[in-house]
Amino acid sequence: MDWLSQQLGSDYAILQVDQAPAHTSSAICWPENIIPLFQPPSAPELNPIERLWQLLKKPLKNQLFSSLQALRERIQEIFDQLTFEQVISVSSYNFILEALFYAASH
Image (cartoon, rainbow, N blue to C red):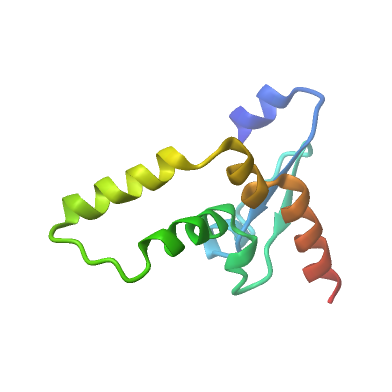
């Protein structure tokens, strides 16, 4: 984190983290310009990769694959077909930030 802090200089960063012990340990010294924003427990919907996975699940539904390689190739095809707009729609910083603040207030 020291490296990131130095790269930021006088700017700030909000770092979204889950509540894994490695992220919540009192041994962590958060630099002043890195602000941790903790996800509520059991909130995979706030993790961008979980939302991206939703875009993969539908085209994979009810398909059988003869090998792990065939599955990998199909996943690659699906990823290759995703548009920039689709990826942004599920990984948008604004969506995540709004959801985190909402969860923190309830």
